[in-house]
View 1 (cartoon, each protein chain N blue to C red):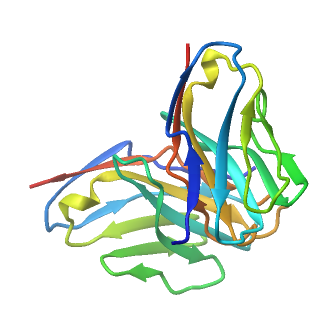
View 2: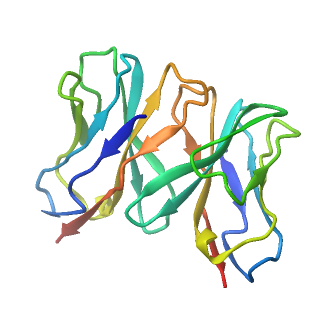
Amino acid sequence: AQTVTQSQPEMSVQEAETVTLSCTYDTSESDYYLFWYKQPPSRQMILVIRQEAYKQQNATENRFSVNFQKAAKSFSLKISDSQLGDAAMYFCAYRSLIKYGNKLVFGAGTILRVKS
Amino acid sequence: EAQVTQNPRYLITVTGKKLTVTCSQNMNHEYMSWYRQDPGLGLRQIYYSMNVEVTDKGDVPEGYKVSRKEKRNFPLILESPSPNQTSLYFCASSLTGHTEAFFGQGTRLTVV
């Protein structure tokens, strides 16, 4: 079964600085998606960025970018120019492209605190 | 506006009293699922549905039921809630089983 590990329960960053959140996963599959979701205090789950495993190019969305290392099974999220509104819980998630049911497998989450 | 709507957002109930959490999506998505979120565990899938009348168990299905009679609706039923079902619940939908999921606002359930 696939597993997703986020080894940083909490991270802090100064406003306007850059922070990187770590995520590793375990799978024997070659085709899958990886996602980062943001959960602010409102509890809403918001998609931040997604990466298709067959694409070598790292995905970027404005201030958010990923470092996808397929061989190492690593998928870190970099937030540049951090803003107070970035403070939230961040979840890394894996989705198989092969298995029936195709559930999202989530990590335990990383709480990001942004200091002004 | 494209969205997934869950109700209620907060619910406190007593052990054994049947309850239903509703979920509706307006995006014509085929795939819908329910997750529960617990501290330190992330989100875990309870049940999912690939289409109307097609449902199957996820990782933590015990104590829950679902139905998918219409494409847009996917209610979660707790026939006899117990305190260990106190959790934050999310309904999610996606166009297919491969694409990103859109989540409802969450339902905070407390069973006393």
